[in-house]
Structure formats: structure tokens, C-alpha cells
Length: 512
Image (cartoon, rainbow, N blue to C red; front, side, top):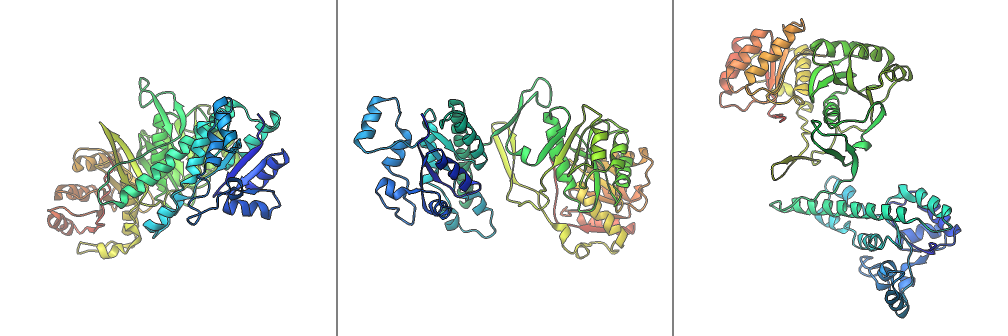
């Protein structure tokens, strides 16, 4: 059946006027509400107010306008069911063949600083989800559109089918509705849940982005859900694997710690080397010099457009993935000669993401949820946090800041030795902090890098003086750590005895 009547009620009016104009041009009657109706009429698009269609006025400040038998009956009655048709005729119910609805911006509202519970509640859409679900339930007869990006698809389908839509399209759009409303309800439930003193539940609904070839290992199945494709765009190479995706996410979090031009190399989500320089080729040299073995088959990321000189340098080793905000044409041509190399354009920046963003991790029998680690301790006056007799000199302070940015992204226990613009040695994931320090020192020695005059960063406090003493013996002249150990006084004394400068940030960065 041709689409003869459409109900349009949207918050996001992107592309709406032209869409509605095209519908009218195909002979479709438009029903609409409130602001949507006003916009269409302003643009000379004929529309019937929903209150005129139902014979009932909008009431309760617009809270009740589409919750009416003539609306939901027109959406829900089964067209080829004689009994339904008879009841529709008896009650003056006309078919509504197309529903175009997007919802009150609840998630955007609660993301605003200082939003009140009352404001959030007023942005809970009732009529919108009701119409969407009614239409989606009856997708065999009704076309339902919840996303403005689908307008063109619907119009094209109608043109190809003499004003009707195909069952396949209606089915796809109907499924999209239930994914959308489920996510919307989950966001409301999660917000209201956090407003209580004790959390009671967590709701998740994420679209499937891709079915992956396998998981961490070939015998494991895997899939990617959510909006990963809104943050990263694959420009070249094989399909991304489960491990690639984990590495890409870790690389993005690391590079977002730096504002200056920086190149970082990662392996199994851990940094192998990080370097900063106005010349990206020089930044690469600094990062690669930290560890010339581990980067083989690793992930490379930069926070600047990837240049041809950098591409040539990177091309000398085998890499799985290279990530950048963009690629110079010459660099892209050069790198695309490697058919298995994935080139990824980084589309978004979470450097200043809200700490309210959820980090979710599965555990046996459930999931853990926490806020993102968005601490900003480096933005304060770090010199006020010096705990030793000697304060760091300017170059030492820069080295401490560099080490601290990197150690935050290294798996615990984490130790990083650094100068002002590069890593010198990285120790990750050991059961003992001293062992992590020993590995970092060994890595630096193996790379031929001197730790004399370096800064050492530790993601958590040194529980005993031995870790700090080992750093001093390796050549470090300053240290940055959270503090908080019962033996802090002993650690500070050890630093003073060796003439070291030390800062206690007061913030721990465990990364398990």
C-alpha cells in the first residue's frame, strides 16, 4: 500500500523541512505536533495539527497530545484483519502509514553541568517512544523513522515502489526503533538510579558495529558493539581484530594526554615508547629508541597529521595499525603499499571527556562499572606538592610531567623513566613495583639509553624506600608519585638523603 498519511513529531529537526516537502509532493498527508507543526507551516508545508486529527486538545503542558486511540489505533491495527478493520471503521480510526519521531534529548540534557533532577525528568519522552513502539510492532504495514539520516533512504524506497516502502526496509527500521528506545530507556534508568543513594540496576543497549573474525584467540567468538565507528575510521587494510580494537582504544587514551606533537608506540595496550617534538620524524626517533624490539607488530599513533618523512621511518618496521588525525597524501600512498597494514583516522578526542562517562568491564557473573579516569592533577600548582627538601628544576619538572602522563596509561604496577620529551624506560604489569622498576632500567640499558638525570614516575605510591632507592641508583634525580603509603616519611627521607626532588600528586592511576 502507498503511504498516504504520515505523523511527524521530532526534537531534532535536521533535514525535516525538505523531507516533509518531498512527502507532500508524493501526495502524503502530514500530521504533526507543536514545534514540528509550526516549523512546517512556516515553510509553507501543509500540515494537520494532531489535536484537529484526534478531536482532543493537547493538555498538561503538552504532556498528553498523541496518547489517543486515533493515533495508536491508526498505527497498530492489522490492515488485513477484517475484525480490526471493522473496529477501526466503527471508531473513526484512519491508518497512519508513516511515523517520523525522534525523542526528547534526555542524554544531552543530563550531560549539561548543573542539570537538576526536575529538568532531567521533564526531558523524559513519553509519547515519542509510545508511537515508535506501536509503529515498530506493526512494521508489516507501517514505516517508522527514528533517525534523520534515514530520510533519504525512505524517499528513495518510496520513489522506487510507487509511493510504498518494501517489507525489508520497514523491518530494518522497526528493529532500529527497538534498539533506540531500549538505549533511551537505559539512559533514563541509569541516571535515575545514580540519583538514589544506592545503585539498584544498570541498563545497556548497544547496536552491533561488527561481527569479528574471532576474539583474543582464534577459538573465541567476538563482536563489537556501540559507537566505535564514530571515533575511528579505517582507511586501509584488513578488518580490525578484537586485539586491534583494544590496542586502538588504549593508544587513543595515551595520545590524548599530550597537546604537543607526539608519537607513541604500543604493544598489547602498553606503551613501548613515547616521544614529543615539533618535528614528527624526530618524535618517532625518540619513541622508537626506548625499545627497538617490542614495536614489531605493534600500534603507532600520533596526534598530528602523519607526514611523509614519518611514514618512511615507520615503514622500516612491521606494524599492525597506524593511527592519526589524518595522513598526508604522500604518506598515505606510501603506507598503503603494505596491504596488511591498517590505517586508522582518529575522528574524536576524549582528552576532556567527562569523568561521568562509564567504563564497563565484564566479570564472572556480571559487570563492573566506573567513571573514566579524567583526573586533572597536572593542571594545578605541582610545585606546591613538592615533599622533599629540594624542589625540581624546570627541566626536571617537565620530565616528571612527561613520565606522569605516560605512567597513567601503563598497566600496574607501572614505572616510567623519562626526560622532558621522551620515555627512557618502561616497566609494566609486574606483581612488585621494584620488579617493574628493574625491568624499566633493564629496558633502558638494553636500548643504550642513560637514565642519568631522568625523572621516574610511579602509578601508585612506593610502599617501601627500596623502589625509590633503586631509581636513584639507576640515575633518576626526581620522582613523581601519588604518595599515601604508611612509610611515606621513610621514602621522603631516602629521597632527601640522595638529593632527589619528589612530588606527591595525591592521585593514584592503577590500570588493571
